[in-house]
Amino acid sequence: MNRAVFLDRDGVINAALHNPLEDRLDTPYRLEDFRLLSGVVQAVRAINEMGFLAVVVSNQPGVAKGKCDYAFLEAVDAELTARLARQGAHLDAIYYCLHHPDAIDESLRVDCDCRKPKPGLLLQAARELDIDLAGSFMLGDSPRDIEAGLAAGCQTILVDGHRSYFRLGEAARMRPHWTARNLPAAVEIVRCMQGGGPWRSS
Ligand SMILES: [Mg+2]
Ligand SMILES: [Zn+2]
Image (tube, rainbow, N blue to C red):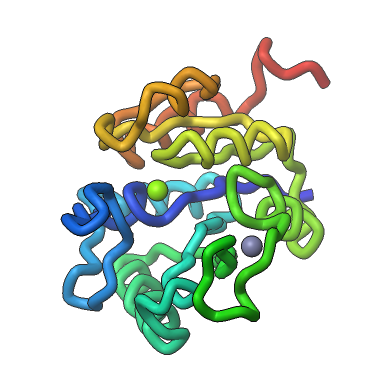
């Protein structure tokens, strides 16, 4: 079986942007705003070299909310893939939840099993890519990433670059296995822990 490092996207791989209308961090809606965070390419390459699958699992309700279209999501994927490839890094798969309970687009107004904090994206990836979830890691900057990772039975690392992202109630529910300042630091934790350790019951 494969082991994976599951990666949230916004706030982990690329910078999340402050949305002044909603006063929260949001995904970029223009390609020129899609900026990789420092050290991300090297961190993904390290995941590749350690033999883990690098799998993005991300809520992307922009289409559902009418804020972007499918072509934009594909353009972002192409841009991300190209920037990684230029320095010898790659993603093994990208899984998005496109649904949202308040979607304008009715076909996407679904109470789905894949919107994090639900673990559906990770479970789907595990089925399709033959992933051992207990030997895998979920890295994300939001409580819902950690909840999804825990629900899937993964080890979890909170990539905590944006403390303002958390409201107190959400933070209280969160029990990540580790916290790291950014993706490179989180991948170093994976490197240290990959051989197994006392926290593993199996
Ligand atoms: Mg995020
Ligand atoms: Zn979904």
